Length: 241
Ligand code: NAP
Image (cartoon, rainbow, N blue to C red; front, side, top):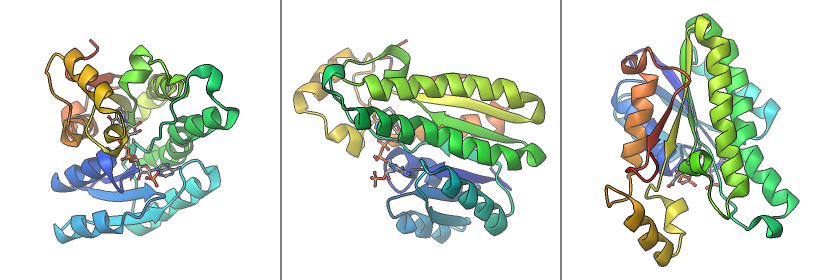
């Protein structure tokens, strides 16, 4: 990842934080976009000798994202990588789901990827680049109670393939990673019973770690993935294959 600058959204905690730290461990510079404070993450990365900056950005805000990405280019010289990781859930059965609960999840999980990718690609047209969208097993196989979330995550897969086709000839690769059950704040909130049921159904009989996702993202961003575009890598312990 030498001489790369990668924006990771939602990287103040959870999966995004581990992705940002792993990119830095591999020699890449990192810009974090989050509404939660990411200064600790940035300081940790700097202490290990890599460049890192935190930008307080709501990724649903089209203009704010454009300004922030231009600022990254001013501050760090370029943008060669983007990981669209920021995401939320708001689970409800469809008939109980309010319009604003649908809209918010679609905005944070899907529109954000449009906002960030559109602004980043403009810069990558000069340098080439690699983009990874964090989808979900719910977007691949559907999940009762997650119509909004699954739709946003399935939408990311169609978005990934379309942008991969548009910008392949400009040296920009676009892929997705679809995690299954990964130990984070998001999954700790699930009931013990749900967690036990999930474990029974996972062939590897364990939940994933944030590093499981970070390693797949790194593979796709780095030279190891240099002939892969428009692909979705499942990181789910075999829960769906
Ligand atoms: P997380 O711990 O909740 O981290 C997500 C980060 O995104 C938080 O810092 C959050 O800030 C931030 N964020 C939320 N809305 C934002 C906005 N509008 N603009 C900027 N940042 C925003 O989540 P995670 O579990 O690491 O999940 C990361 C990604 O992986 C998500 O896209 C998720 O859907 C996907 N995923 C996770 C799992 C899993 O098992 N955990 C499985 C499949 C897919 P706040 O805390 O202030 O909201």
